[in-house]
Amino acid sequence: MAFRAWRDVLRSWRPGHAPALLVIPLGLIVTVCVVDVLSPPHIHLGPLLVAAPAISVALAGARVTALMGALAVTAQVLIGVLRGAWDTANIQAQIAALIVVSAVCVALCVVRGRRERQLHRVRSVAEAAQSVLLRPLPTRAGPLRIAGLYIPAEEEADLGGDLYAAARTAHHSTRLLIGDVRGSGLGAISNTALLLGAFRAAAHRQATLPRLAVHLDAAFRWDTGQWRSPTEQDAMEDFATAVLLDIPDHDPVVHLISCGHPPPLILREDRLIPLVAEASHLPIGFGGAFGITDYDIQTFPFEVGDLLLLYTDGVIEARDTDGRFYPFTERAPQWTTDDPDELLRHLRADLLAHVHGHLDDDAAVVAIRRLADGPVTTRDGSTGA
Image 1 (cartoon, helix red, strand yellow):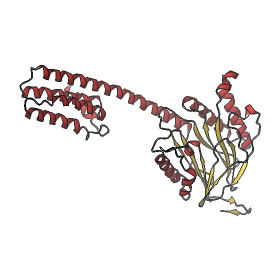
Image 2: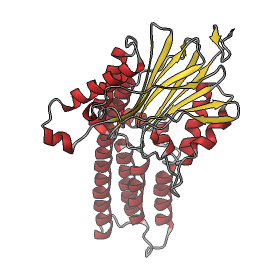
Image 3: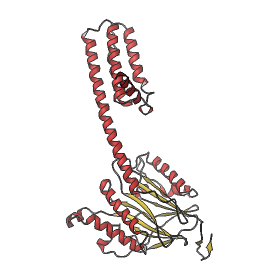
Image 4: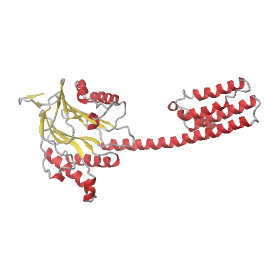
């Protein structure tokens, strides 16, 4: 049994528990013991031993903290024996105080360990939910190279509603959705799952992009409102800003419908071109309520070599400690020549550096580059490789 107990202690003494730093409480115990024994009778350093288990709480788990507490008590007993004061009330009070403090420190470690395990489970569930909802985007879709990035907010249990998805159609085009569902937490997760499910079920078979937008709005509005009374619907509106895109394989254009979402950007050589739609529709979930039965499509050039950026407001509204917004439109052109994956790696590092690692809202970005693979019709009507 004694061997098993020491084996458990040694197992807890692993790199994750900063063993190098545990030299501090050990050194403190040894130093106090030696100095106290060698000091004059009127000098007593024994009370300093209480710092050993207190320091161990921040550096190790319950087993190692208990070990440090036991060593501190042993050192105090040794000091009393060597100084011939073992039976004095002062030494016995110090020993009793060390035992009480060590027990409290061990109890704190146990409580902290439980909370850390609970937080780990919450994080695992959050990561699993996000991985199910935000399936990895295809790296290639026709002549397109695609990459997606999702950065959760700092609050581990506060999941946002940022989303993106892609689908291929029978008409040799790629359809994409990027959006941001109102709110956070379980309500946003539910609405995100609803919107992504509706898109994945219909994007590949809807004849036109406007019909797809109508379908998403109707599905979202019906599901979120079917169990609420009219009063509840007025007080609690669910909606999602979104951009729907259709990119043909053989035509250097991108068709889009904007529903209250930030405009996509095209990086062309050293230029940045915002794709600002002339008609920005109401967010998904509001269209049917206001009698909207059709959506206007905007068409923009999207040529070979161009890089298309889709993003959520978590990117452009990220602030540093001085309250300055992240200069997305200034930084993005720096990485125009990079492939989508490399661009998103640069963007992630730069964004997190700007906010010092503390995002207040989830952020999502999709980067799409049109490649020259396959025949693509140019602006003058000719066909190039």
